[in-house]
Image (tube, rainbow, N blue to C red; front, side, top):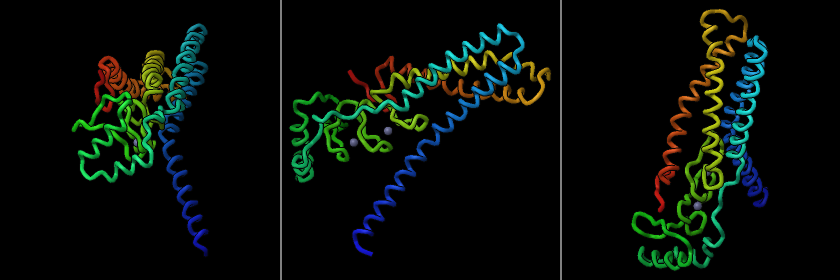
Length: 253
Ligand SMILES: [Zn+2]
Ligand SMILES: [Zn+2]
């Protein structure tokens, strides 16, 4: 075997490994989507069409449900697929400057090089020691509130956190969609919980028959369970927005 074919084989297995890791990251999203699809089936088919007897009630439930479902699904889609905010090119450091930085003899000399690189850039956030923030993986000066995400493998503008449930960083470009997603998801769960409540009670009184009653029972439980966890997360993010903070903790004035 030649050297070239050995290195080709290595890069092929590396690429396959990276593809597997990328595919695995979608598992939490697939989990959420599966629950949402099942909730759609349980609510529309099992509750509205097979359990609710009153025509007016059925139509009202279906209209309300589909309106909330549409905005909830839209905000989830936007949070997942909005491209993360990348650091603008003027923050990039050239190879020559990078070499100067690496060859700096002391910490003080390194600070000097960084100060020169950041002059003219709109940077106010500093490290705890007062130095310019710099990413040695991406080779650029970090803009205020930008952080390196180890999952995405790059620096992300106004990074809040990396969320496995959306397989994306929650950051500058999709933070609004994320907060909307929390609000609409909570709204979705509460709507399901309130409209299934009377049927859930009927279940306990054994007035409901068949498989449908199990779907309605679980639908109520799952909606309440998600609503409880969503309400705390939503309130926490409302607090962060109101105080100009992010999950990573820094404050910007
Ligand atoms: Zn970085
Ligand atoms: Zn990330």
